[in-house]
Amino acid sequence: MKLSLLPKIAVTLSLFMHHPIGFVCAQENYIYLRAGRLYDGRASKLQENIVILIRGGRIVQVGRNLPQPAGATLIDLSDKTVLPGLIDAHTHIVLHRGDYDAQILRETPEYRAIYATANAKATLEAGVTTIRDLGNEGAGFADIALRDAVAAGLAPGPRMLAAIQPVTSTGSYRLVGYSPYHQWPQISYPADGPAEVRKQVRRVLAEGADVIKAYIESYEKRRLSSEKLTGALNYSQEELNALVEEAHRAGARVAAHVYSDEAARMAIAAGVDSIEHGLYLRAETFRLMAQKGIYYVPTLLVYELWRDAKIFGAITPENKLKLTNTVNEHTASFKQALTTPVKIVFGTDTFELPGTNAQELELMVRYGLRPLDALQAATSTAAELLGLSQLIGSIEAGKAADLIAVPGNPLDDIRVLQQVQFVMKAGQVYLHRQAEKH
Figure 1 (cartoon, rainbow, N blue to C red):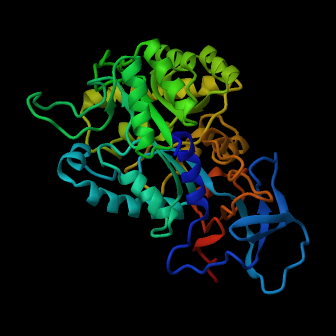
Figure 2 (tube, rainbow, N blue to C red):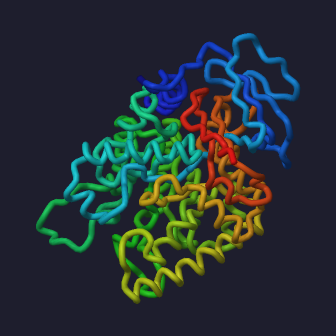
Figure 3 (cartoon, rainbow, N blue to C red):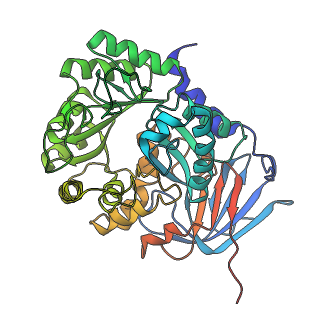
């Protein structure tokens, strides 16, 4: 089997395999869903009093005053806003709250896979129906096992694209602070030189990865400043070019972990598909990304939570200052991005708080992104980045029936996305909170 077919097979399976035990199967019967308000993933405004007709996990028709087929299941969301399922383009579903090193050193991959199953359920019930998971941090193959289990209907969770572990240079992404005499669990795939990089990309794709994650720089290798988060560059331009070329040859996309503008420029020159984090980028760099069709996944929230000691445990005064400086510069970079045509995509990276994904959208809007653009970042634009726009990201005939519903109008208050009351993925209802009667 050709490696280039693997991502396509994973996507097909995750969309159309069997339903979870305990959920009503509506694969052959029509579902007649009434939406009081509808955001379809593409339009510039909400539509009102729309009907969505669903059959076999797919959207059949969208419009006003559609006739209800005989025997169709009625779902009345006429008091809510219906949207496409959210797409989180940067997760680590296998990680959980608590000491990071202890998870890698003390917990088995099997235990972490069970933890990830709980995280997946919480994520789905928060309205995230698809994730791009960018590294399991030393958990073996727990991420692709979860991906396949969700696809087979063994556990509820979002549709998944998985990276397994990132490809990076020797010593640049590892556990730090331990004796070099001991061997610790591997959290990345090391590769040096163009030939070895190509081989490692081939290896991770053969193991079942859907996407390649590459660390362009990392503070685990060497920290260049005590004033803010920084990291030494990991690869030469030649090595990066080989990595991206090999991934693209196999039909896989590349997500680049980047802090500095210099690293971003190298990643852009190599032709990566997305820049993750991008803490210290200039407007000129965002414009270059836009010219080359490279997406920006800013992950704003994780650094603010880290600064405020809401994740990763207590922090020292020195690290508090460092993270404060980092957040300030990151926010300034994000605001620079808003002055350019670069496409921005929703991604959280907040693995300690599964189910709180939509808080990222609140921050994006707070710092200047229009609510409409935030919705697109989490739906149609994210689907483009993942290469799944023919299947998800918008509400239109032929697409997978991934739908969520919230009270109120997200264009007026983006925070209503933190109050998801209905979740459907591929035509299956996973959450339906009825309005309380007074």
